[in-house]
Each structure stands twice: as C-alpha cells, then as structure tokens.
Image (cartoon, rainbow, N blue to C red; front, top):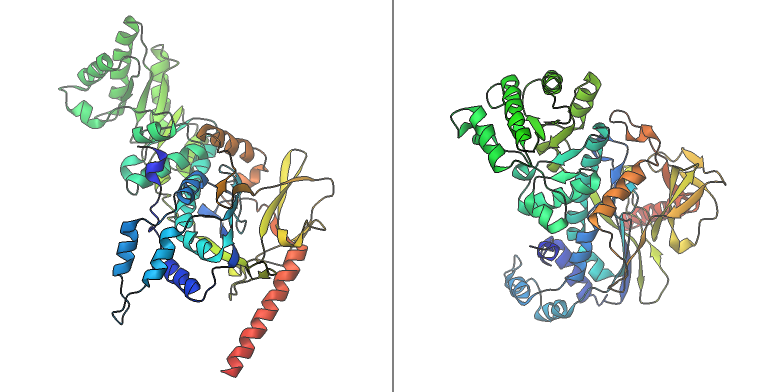
Length: 493
C-alpha cells in the first residue's frame, strides 16, 4: 500500500456539491471564478492552539481528481422525486473531461494555527472549487484534530516519548492510518501501527499482549519464552496477574538476558495506580541493577491523566496512548468550514462576499485571505488576517473577530512572515512536500516560539488573532449592505 492508495475517490463528496455544480453548468457560469477558504471557528479541546495537518493527502486528492466511467454511470442512474434523471448526459460528459486547474495556497502542515485563519485557499473555477469542498474538509478536519491532540499529549509528557497505540480503537482502517500520520506530526515518536510504519516511514514499537502471558503455565515462563524469541527488544507487560510480581519476574528474566549479552529494555504498566506502581517498579529495577530499563505506561491515557501523573512524581519513561488520541476522545470533530470569499465573471472585477449570521463568530470573511504572523524577540506575538485583493496591509492594527471592541496595535519593530504559501498554480504542483519527519520537527519548533500560557491545558492564554483594520471596515460595510439588500427584498415580497 502507498500514499496514493489512500486518495479519496472523486465521488467521496456530498450530493449537493454535484447538484450545485450542475446548477452552475446549467446557468452557463463556467467562466465564473471564485475564492474559497477552509478554516475552523473554535479551538479544539478548549485549548489555545491547533496543529494543521492533512495537506499532503489533500495534494494527492487534487492531483488525482477525475470522474471515472463507473462514477459517471452511477450518477446517470440517480433520479429526482419526479423520476427524471438528476443530471443531463451532457453535464456528465463535461464532468468526464474535467481536470483540476485551480490555484491552491495553504499553511504548511505542522504549523500552529488559530480559529478563523484560512488553512487552505482555493482560487479558480467556481464549479471546481465547489466540488472540492467536502473531501478537503474531510481530510484536513480529521488530521488537524488528531495532530492537535497529539501535541497536547506530548507537551503534557514534558519530553518523555509518546507512542501512538490506537490502531485497534481507531475509526476504520484508513482512519487509523490518517491518525497515525497526524499523531506523529503532532509529536508522537512512534506508532504500533505497522502499516503506518511502512507507508509513512514512522518508527514502529510494541510489546506483547496479556494473551501471550496467559498462553504459558506461568508468567515467568512466558517472559522467558519471549526473551528467547525477541532477545533484543524485550519489553514485558507485567500486570496480567499481579504487577509487583510481574516486575520481579521481568528482573529475573533480565538477568538471563544479560548472561547472553542482551538487556531488559523495559516493562509496561497497563492498569492500577500508575503513580504508585511506577515508583515501586523503579525501585525494584534500580535495586537489581537495571537502572537503564525503561518504564512504559498505558491504560486509557490522555493529556490530563499524564499531566496529573507528572505532578504526582510518577517515574514513567514512555507513554503509550491509544483510544483517546486516535479518536480525539473528548472532541469528535474539528468543525471546519469552507466559505466563499469572492467571485467574479470572467476577467471582471472581484465581488467580495460575506455570509451573515445572528452569531458574530459565524459571519464569514470576504476577499482573498492571507495570514501574517508577527514575532518580537524570537516569540510570536500576534496574527493578522488580511485581504490580498486590497494589497499589502497599510497598518498594524488588528480587530477582534468575536469582539470588535478589542483592538491591538502590533509594534512597528515586530518582524513578520505570511503563512499561506503556493501549493498549486493552475493545477500544477509548485510545492515541494517536506518529509513527515521534517513536519514533526516543524511542529515542535513552532510550538516552542509561542508564549507558554498558550499551551496550558486549562484556561490557556488567548493568542491575539484579528482582522486587519481595512478588512474589518470592508467586512462591516458588506454586512450593512447585505442586510439592507435582504431587508429590501423581504419588503418587496
């Protein structure tokens, strides 16, 4: 299996994307261009940041976007409530010849991101941009969620390595692969998922199950047999019967390993009071001369449990985290959205668009959005969302999105760089994809450049993100004009 085998089929979309595309085709809007933005509105896990992830899979999807003959045959079978075909044959012929030809800009994977910032921008055919919406959200929403959860867990571990153990609890086989990839980018150093190791080059690690111990007359014999089979990678699961006795049996087999020039790599605690047992295990191991033997803990861990065990002084060297990582246990979805920012007919002027809502946080942002990140003394201090259609920002004032009374002036001395970079130009890939290891390094490096309070698990510091003052003013004017137009139309009705 390769990465290409995981490319979502073109029909992995919602029906309304196809019905809207058909409507654009019927209305002869093929020359219309549009700008769409993919973003999210709220921080996951009540945290202070997110780690964007999934761009590489999105690139594969776009490069392979093509309606196959059997796709079109299926669409030809669809009927409306009146029994008539849902799509005309000529439209299906159009889809058959359709090839991806848009511009894509995106924030690189492994970057720290915040609500309302466009993670990805699609510019080009209105019809094409509409068709990509569902798959892009599916890819980026999930992997961003898992990469963020992984980063939170790894930060809670305070430098102790974390292994992703979630394959058996993941949401399907491809969900497991995507989760393993995202967890590694977020900070995990290895996975138990062998296929993920093969496909992505992630280091693989594992121990043995309780069934191994139960398959032998005694725990000691089970450990001894495992040592004979895997003398260079012995990590014994010690809690099948009694954890303290299991640790002692591991030490006994450890002495045998040393007699043949090997060593006891580690023990694994999977139940009970992990704080008490880790301290007891460390004492037993050290007393027996196994000071380098590592203690691995598992058992429904997440960032909060790990942080608590760290505070209690648990002597745990590695953490195996499964269910609550790969399922994003306390937040099942990121809630990403894909909104139209501007539209034009042919080479005409751009018309900026805004979606209204009774909730200020759900009102969309018009234009062709870019994110400018400012730093002062090697620390990131604020992000500005601005509209490239307006040219470079004239000033450095940002306006709060949820609360427009909050404004911040960024110091003139602060340096900056823009986050969205070119990925495709007219359908041609212009971006050199980093390796998964480089993406993991990027995430660690970027997290290190934010004020520590942003990364707190509880009540994190709110990092300043806002609209550039000019964009805020344009958005406000568009809201007023749109509300007026809607009101006038309602009065005519």
